Image (cartoon, rainbow, N blue to C red; front, side, top):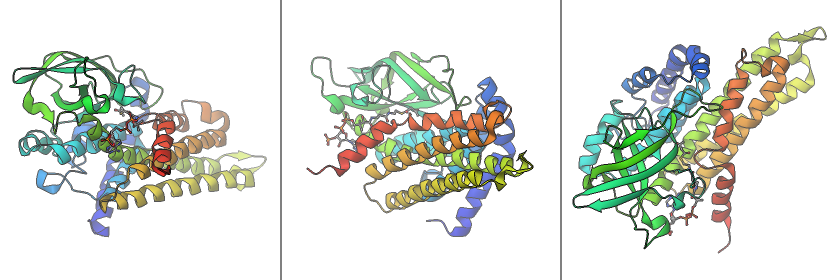
Length: 381
Ligand code: CAA
């Protein structure tokens, strides 16, 4: 657990970096869909690719609240950068910390935490989105090796990562075992047969790299399997429990920036002879925006505390993702309304925030899937 001073230092470092090295360039990266790997590398050197990694593996070993606060700062500058480092910190890192062998931790976790390797996660397929357990990419044992074939979809960092955690079936077509037939492999992206497709041309988060993956006879030694055979779906769900909290912080960062821009704009913009911030309709909108953001942040920090206390937080992380992402969408919609015609123009910052907010309701499980997870946990028997 960090002291309050240490926490403030980490968050200030993230805020200053975001203000100087990310925010001034974010609109250009968005326009050109440019993934600035050098910025990710700089963040890595400062420790931000090892935020959740224990110090014994060269990570910062941050408590979850500090991690979320740092991610919020990066996201307020550009959510595309936040998702690239958020996935790395939340999913592949969690998987290796929990299930990696000592050798796997030395080989991958330690350099990931030092920012020398960027990682991603590939679960979804064209026909397996919300129903993730129906995935079909296949690994077949061949002597001491596994051979992977199939295709993955919409994987963050797929074309820019150094290694990907990939979920594939290890049960055979004549003996399918549903979620129990899925395993996780650590796949260095320079392995023969791994091919990332052209990056997707997305509505928002345009600077993040999102791509499909082709796996054509990707041969891996057996020690590239993570944990136990058949446990990959459970590992993916555990990773998503951590990932969904990160998406919550990302959504809060987007919403906060939209509010900040709105407050400044409403002070400057004059209509009917006075600043529009003097109209009660505008004041009430700003008040509602600020209240919802505060509630989303408070919920996520409360759940972060429960996670660090070792509680089962699956249902709660879904609540965070659901509430924060719908807050970001609502707040950015209000921001565009406050900016009026200007809000609809690319020259002003809020339309990017609106586009970036939308995917937080979709990836790492749609809002509908979060409601399924919550409802299942609440159900009596
Ligand atoms: N932690 C640990 N284990 C878990 C778990 C969790 N959070 N959730 C489920 N499991 C276990 C279950 O206990 C069960 O094991 P047992 O049978 O031994 O009890 C096993 O996993 C199967 O669980 P379910 O029966 O609940 O599985 P399901 O097929 O009904 O699926 C689901 C449940 C919640 C709908 C799940 O499929 C899901 O979350 N879907 C959404 C997928 C998703 O978020 N995809 C996003 C991909 S990542 C991405 O967006 C790309 C990117 O790079 C950003």
